[in-house]
Image (cartoon, rainbow, N blue to C red):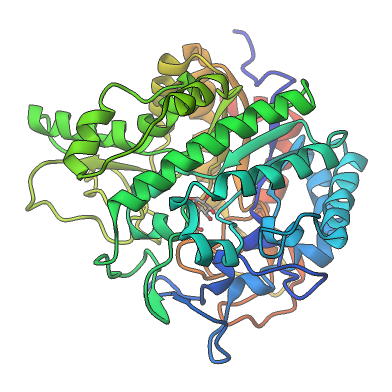
Length: 493
Ligand code: BG6
């Protein structure tokens, strides 16, 4: 029997975002971005967004896990694991502190040059997200975030700066992280849209109940439209500046199965899949809003102005590949008596057939295969899984080891599911494990929820040496990359 393995060109690696990883908030001329205003939380404690930096609050993004000062050490570890690609984001406010400066900060520009040079040493390709929830706070305040069209040219000025500056260093780009998160409630308003809640201090963590009364669908849908336009313009610009550039969209992978086999539940699941995935995906990949949009706008009570010029921009700025995050799946039903599963960021009912993580996220490798087939059937563009992983508590043993067999088990099953999808005929560019080095959780703002293959000695309250340790999964993933996963795919044959 033929040995199963991933193609040699497959891009194995890990993924991070600046606000969860980089820190260095007081270094250079960096401005504040939206997540810098969010306090730490936990599985049970809310995190807050504050209007100014309050001395009594702890803000985890300010130091994060200090990639800013430790990038050489971290990238060397990625080289040791055999990474072919490293997903990271540029912090917009590190280059343009308020967003509206004409020239970028020199120190910010230089920092990312240094990071890319370090990647090159180990033949690691950077995969750069232009905006991973990192709008400068000043812009969010002044314009109500992306709900204003005025932000588009400001963003494009930032894009042009980085496309020109890093022309020789970066080939793979993503425009907005999880653009579709804006269609999923208040957390999406703030992180995805830079639309801030009213008040001095507002609970925003997804792990606890948050106040949704300030949510305004009109602003959210407007913000999505503006991001879609900005994304399309950025794709065109990237191609113009360097025809070698490959630019992808990035979707929050939302799998929704019907909760029961009642036709009504099947329809509900279809509705969730459409709104959560295809509304944004269709625009970014096919270049126009899907046919169900008009009904969706009507039902949500929103009016979106799409001009002829907008239609042209969307048509011309379609992406080269489709990237997405995938962690878990949900279900959908129109029965109001079925409770929403707790701790579930995507707010769907639970699934009695699946186990969940310590944070209540279902573990569903088959869902990854299913979703990849759905996306590929619809778009016929190469896929890139740019986030996948297990958020879990880890224990640092006295001898400096971390035995994270649960994480290995999770990754093993998801990599096998990905191979199955490839054998189904799906074209896949690569796979980057989320939070390859432990970093701050985006939803809860804590350190305890760890995804990494590299442990960082840092606690929820900000204490810790920041020292790095290789987990068992580090060595496991190193072997997966070395053998193109032949070691796990042909097990026992
Ligand atoms: C994705 C985000 O939604 O999920 C990441 O792009 C985030 O920024 C990841 O960290 C995992 O979520 P969390 O809340 O466990 O950090």
